[in-house]
Image 1 (cartoon, rainbow, N blue to C red):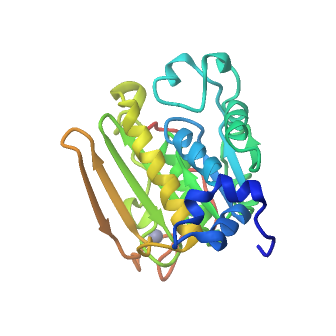
Image 2 (image 1 turned 135 degrees about the vertical axis):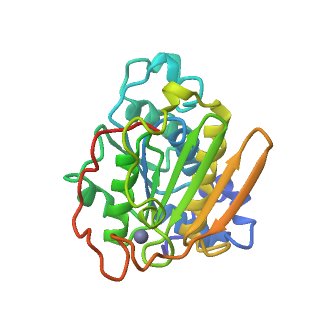
Image 3 (image 1 turned 90 degrees about the vertical axis):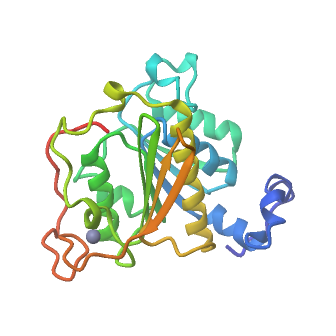
Length: 267
Ligand SMILES: [Zn+2]
């Protein structure tokens, strides 16, 4: 934190540093920060590119899958040369090409109750861009238990939602949804489609929210829920308080250890 910025860093981050709300102090905070992105897909792609460009010093990238041709319609981290390659490695290459000053930590794995605590506790903020509800609940539960802010996004067709979880300070994902919907109730992007640029909007908003949290600027983010509807072109933001009856973050929590939430049902 005390280290002065190098001449190269001052040039690279000049448009940040000139902002009074960021400045050299803020840029050093970002360079010292650690962010984890769960999912290197449609949401994780723009989020990863903006976090790398912004100079978030350490960026964890977690995804169990390999690049498929159908991903390239929206997953802008990956290219034709990456087909069949694990997404985390093409993500790492792309992020380091933008900014060799950031350290990218690839996790070629699925988030689980076993690996979540040891991985998540290394980070200052977690961005969930996964494509299934069990993972979103697992990110929420682990972040609330560890006291780490989480920015969870979901997209389908022309719509997106963004949930900002600041443990104990506003609603968590379980305050809002209690538990994952039964598999099959909500169609997947594979079944129902997704306009690629909608993923771009929400993933960029995730990066923006994470950067604001790391800098401590802007409106207090706790419990903020944002809805985006692309066809009319509308954003709506509401703020939801913590539910004292929440099974996870309420006054008498019933969930005290991580658990797997049923079968994967894809969002
Ligand atoms: Zn809660």
